[in-house]
Image 1: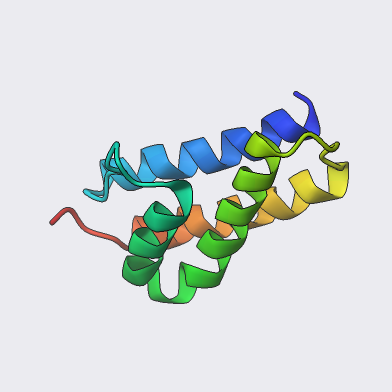
Image 2: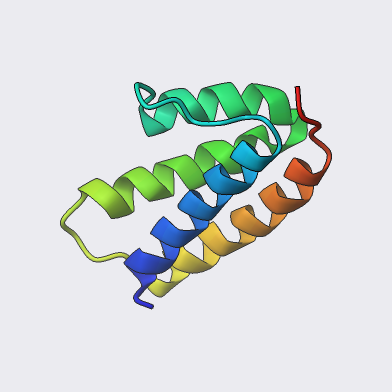
Length: 91
């Protein structure tokens, strides 16, 4: 996968995992609106969700290249969010 595809994967995987914990993304929510909503449930994971959302928006909507370092940072946030999501329970 390209660096851009990796960033997209990490974000989309995170929202799928969040859905499985009872925190789905609603169709009318922008990525940032969803990031804010999920971030408030994650407490300590909030900065990681904010950063991953920003990386996703940049990778999805920006025409400039996504660097390998950007994908690496997104991967780190994705991993930490995976741990944070394990602590959430279905509502």
